[in-house]
Image (cartoon, rainbow, N blue to C red):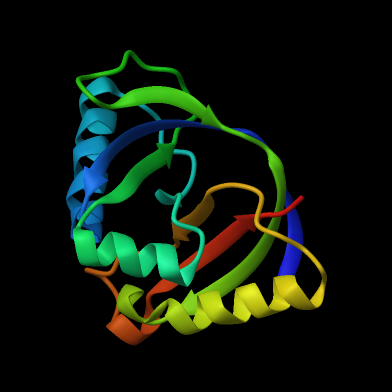
Length: 153
């Protein structure tokens, strides 16, 4: 785990409630708007996770009622389309961990991140971001890379 400073990031994004299994379809919905509107992608897609503890994630999984937000960083402002909006993810100080492997196995990486935060006396200060660094349709499941960033105060 390392501490990094992230700049503010303009994105096209979408937020709704439902099961975590909707994340992929939501990303495709936002990407379709990017292509249609001529937005210029400026980084990997991101999932903004408002469930910031294992217990909250387990509850959201059991009820299929997670607070889901996905976005793509963009280099130019475009007119929103439907539920997809243009906004800015705030800058801040984040604890960063890299997960290698299937998304479904991120729990151990999160546990290491939480332990690292506790060891440094840091607390999570807002929604966690997961940046998807490669395309799971183009790499083996063991090679999927997810950057997990938790804002810290």
